[in-house]
Image 1 (tube, helix red, strand yellow):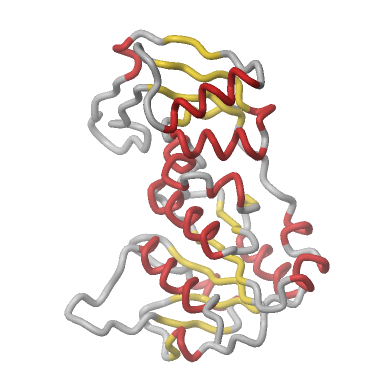
Image 2 (cartoon, helix red, strand yellow):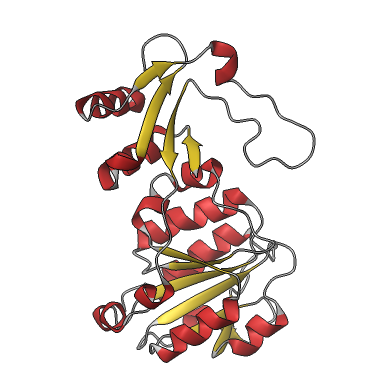
Length: 250
């Protein structure tokens, strides 16, 4: 399968980590600008085709209904092969866990907005998250929107796609990783979570939060305590704050 990327920084990340999977760079009239100049230079140096596309194909208008790729305007784009996911046994291998005794992993329980998924990948890459587990069903697929919002995060954070999230959580436990759910109804604030162990942080659906089976599988559950008038955060923002707290050096 292939995806089209319209963020040049996402394309540059793919060129840096797996240039063999960049199929084509397409320009919509004129000379490339900004970071696209570097994309074109790298593509040409690797003999990746650089072609022109009609201007009307480089623009998309917002469609009715939910379309994660609608509304993206492209002066240029790159067609790449999807990055394959990492086997679960590798994501929670003894070597990886031993190398990160205070590491953080993430699990996304049926997140449906690709912008949230992309933002979480970007956060994960920024904070050095060890890996991400994503659910397949009732979840946003890894579209070009996810890659573009992640701005390189999809290329740098290993991930695993699962039909059964509970199995992944149990695999993490067997590897010595503790499972930490997130819920606004939890009694413990994330600042009170011990930092002397590796954690798999689980975040839930944008509206429903974590499923009951997921909550029952967690070793601990934590919350973010509001300090002002607004009492909730977008899931990608909340995840960034939680990860920042868990990875804070004390």
